[in-house]
Length: 568
Image 1 (cartoon, rainbow, N blue to C red):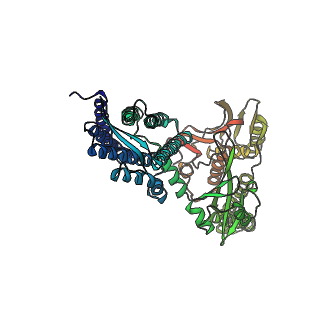
Image 2: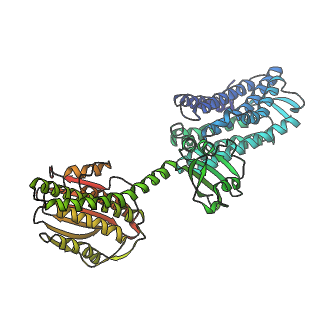
Image 3: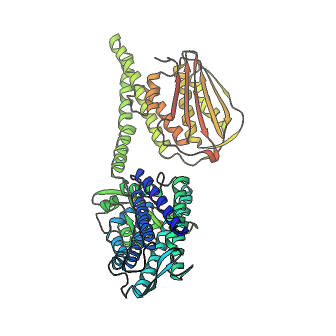
């Protein structure tokens, strides 16, 4: 006898399900792939048992196969939910007691169907009927069966909700996959509901037929949407790993100040493993503030200093739902700042004052009758002046860059003239020209003046006995280029390269510190410096973002160099 079209469709469904299982095995290292493959195999077994049952005559064997098939359908739901958890990056739930508890009703129901398919708590009445499709079993659901059916639909709703949540919070990359999984699952869910309503007829295996449609849609996810190659679980697991492995402590605080999540570093910093569930008010009190709005702040705990900041967390509608509280151990930074403050005071007062005394003694030695003493006095005076200049530059760096002040509108030509004119007077042997068109720019005038003065001073120092220096300006792509040109051999490479690399180096004279000042100043302005030097001259270009294009850049390589064997 030729099998019915339903049986043929079910056999094709089995082939497709096993094909998907084989593909899943190839990608078994991907999150969700193993459970996806096991789900397809279990579904294929369920469909195979259904086909075998349809071929049987009415009797105990047919009833037993129906019980096995129905039990397998409940286990399919368990594996489906496990796959959804793994697929969405919630694989930690699979090994928790909560997943076992959620699966217990379905596993227990499956066991009952396996052992006693016609037991009265599950079904009230069972009838076997021979139809053109085969021998079907009509069952009137009992009390436990109704509870199981309702629970199955609840599990499907939760699973589909997790998929939707993952896509909404993630990337559009997974929308196609999510739609395929969602529609496929809905097909089998609706089909199972129609079976309860005895549509199209009592006992017809519509749910198993729906598995065929589901397999096609899931095949589209595999072949058309890169499922098993790219899954949202990787992003979810990565975000969780980043959160847990951050060097800073992070807490998630609800709007009602309840702490709902804390990473290991936060628990270590605060010495409390039970932060989750506590009120953040107690924590804020320890920090010395009364509300999250009072942050950022620094506080002491167990002899260390911490910086606490808060950032709002909003939902997809832009509404506040809580805050992320970040805690950073700034003890090394605070101690370093204290050391620098002490050293700065020493440099500002003690060293500079002592150099003034040394310079006075050296100048007296220069007028000594003994030529050797006079020569040593001249050398000492020169070194004392260099050291005094370094001290003055260090003080100026500290004063200007630590408190640069706000940006403002400045007349560029006036700023350049105010910087260049005193330098030209100090170097009467030099020819200093400016080529600046009158224009107004928004920048930090104090820092820009400092950077420009150092660039011009370096040009005057390295450009020979009668240097020619030109200061020009040009605009391009929202940036202002200030260009300092000279006709000398250029700044020695030995002074430029350490600053390009961002490495500390010995300061043999004030120009080295001046280059550091240029580097730090341009970073503060959000700009870059390019040094282009050949044997016929050098060119220092300071590219300054203006207005809305300005932002401070912490990059240590603010200076770049194009040198051709100069200054060696």
